[in-house]
Length: 109
Image 1 (tube, rainbow, N blue to C red):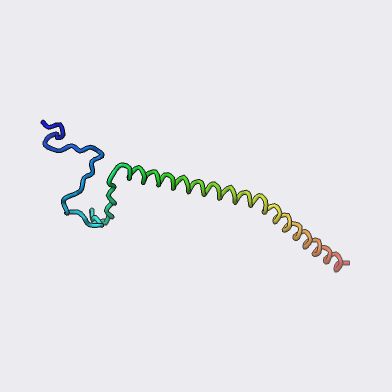
Image 2 (spheres, rainbow, N blue to C red; image 1 turned 120 degrees about the vertical axis):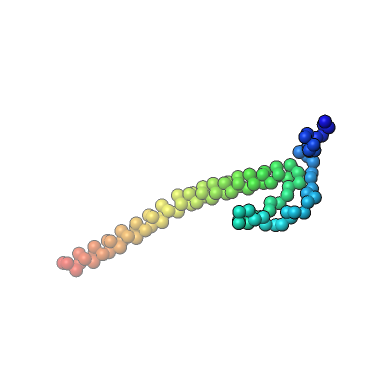
């Protein structure tokens, strides 16, 4: 028995690049059970797969970092601005109430 074959089948290393010689399934969309699926893009080597996974992981980390920083900035702005706005609104409402109560006391006299 040949060292490169087992049961008459050739054994390939993971680093071997194989090209499909049969042209049976070169369509872009594959139909299975009545549903269409896009054919996956072929990845020629392990480095491409690792790079793609790494890019997706980095993209996910970047999105998480953006969300975290945006949240921190929004909270900081809210802590600085909302108390000032609230104080101004409360003072204006108090002044309105004083004017209303002052006018009512003058008309009742």
